[in-house]
Length: 309
Image (cartoon, rainbow, N blue to C red; front, side):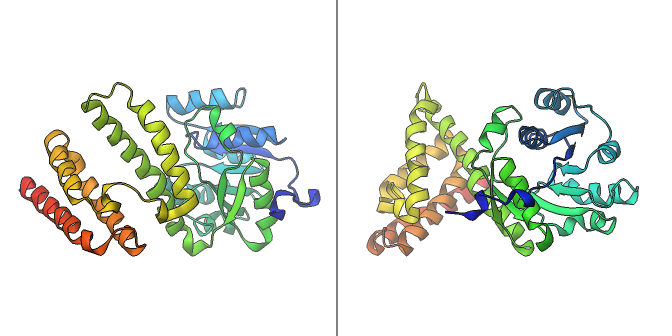
């Protein structure tokens, strides 16, 4: 059993005033979770009407103020802006003198570790990278979903206990990620989660085209079982016509996709090739069947390119 679940109370940070810069889907949920742990949200910044409504729903009575004012009021600042906006935001806050010595500066980007916070560090801030490995809806359900959620954590050695305590207080589980491994870590999550949404949405569209009245009800049990099997067994969970080497079935799929949803052909072929490679490597796809299958996939690519021309 992990000892990280029971931190020494002496290692827990004192109750902190919390500010949020960027009222997207993530920041208000994390601040609301910290509030449940006894911390006190005191300020939030948001530009769009949507972000302001979100902040009002998840953090009622917490004033909306400019980013510099958030830093002036808070001991713990959550920087929850898009990845590409983060470096400029940190530099701007540091250059204007908004950062205070001893202030905990936390960003939630999966891509970056703590180096992106160097301008704030030079101003005396304490840098932490706490990335929740979770998709967010921007509603109160997000606070509940944080229970048991893994956080990709990067922190200086002297701040590891503080980082661990904050994650556990939000109901999460810290997973330590080295600074230079952050982009790879983030790519892995994007590959699994973001692309999954695309695949499921495409599958639902195709089922509707095929006449299925409730594609979500049809896919739910199937995808739930596939996900559970994959998490338990990895490549051993591969099933379907590609893993079996059913070249004729795959060829029929490609034909129908070209007819009804040509925009999905490239993705289908790419995933089928990746699946075939993994099935071959793990002994699921028989080599004598793989040749015909790979031929179909290669021909499918040629056909798609031909249509594009």
